[in-house]
Amino acid sequence: MTESAPYEVLESIEDVEIRRYPTIILAKVRGLSDDMAFRILFRYITGENKVRKEIAMTVPVISTGPTYQRIAMTRPVLSDEDSFSFVMPSSYSISTVPEPLDRRVEMTEFKPRRLAVLRFSGRAHDDSLKEKEDRLTSVLRSKGIQFKGAPFLMRYNGPGTPGFLRRNEVAVELA
Image 1 (tube, rainbow, N blue to C red):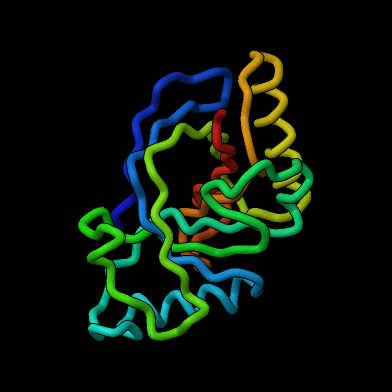
Image 2 (cartoon, rainbow, N blue to C red; image 1 turned 30 degrees about the vertical axis):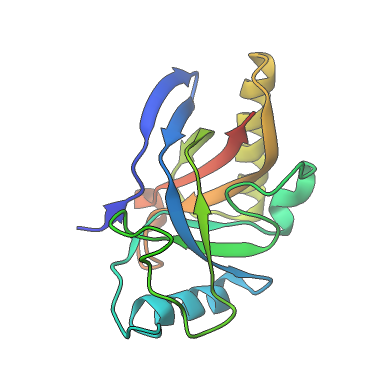
């Protein structure tokens, strides 16, 4: 079974969950298409690292891009402009995760944080993402909940999973 980034649901507001995530380590590639970045990160976890060790695939896979830049960035958050990231297994820390051989792979540690998350199924297309982002930020604003940074996409299934079985989420960090 694939490890999922752990979180605690603090509360639900309509169809939005407020979650607390522990420290997580991300392997990130910036400025490339999702497909190209996925291939680079997949090579990293299948042994293209200094210790030639395979790393278990985890979920979610996190991506951002032009779709997510409608809300001004206030500072770097879980993911940033045009990036694609794999969450590393919880057994690793920033000091124990294998060092990548490909310089395009960055290792980043994110301390515990709270996220507002809207879950949805189907394929994550630009039109549906805009609708989900708008719903997420609208619920937060209606309740006076402050957030920072741009929404980002978290995907939980492989490309062969039928759309109606896919788990996707749009999320934003809370202030």
